[in-house]
Length: 164
Image (cartoon, rainbow, N blue to C red; front, side, top):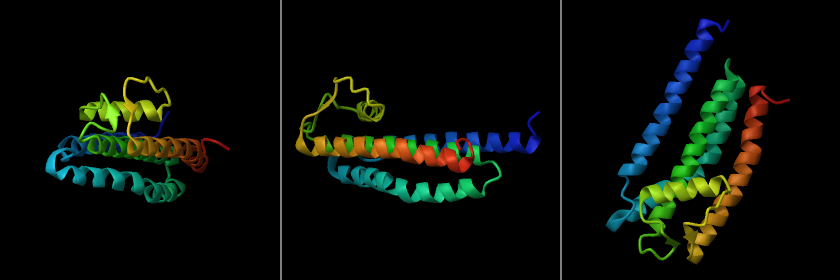
């Protein structure tokens, strides 16, 4: 039987995670990523990507101090993956303002789709980085994804006590 306080903590964690994802998605939808203020969305996307590292360190400390480390680790991973996906999607969408960096990347959903396909290393080939800046950014995302998924998730699991 799961104690009541653990069940309540799990509910709070799930609600926080859903709230974070919904909030970040809402920000992605309303940010000006095209037009005269496209740079605002690009700057916010870059900030989201760069902030993943200090937030990761902060969340690792929170996992270590928590009475429910697995929940805190899962919540951290949801936050960090959402930040990376929407951060890169914002950058890709903004940098393709003149349709010279990517083929077929015309909407915010296209940008998010391309980011998730790149994150998962599937690479369907329907959207392709055609410009040098786009290729450089995609290479950076792939290297960051490998590092993030390979190291951060493992460290979170170890600190949470899931993996020895």
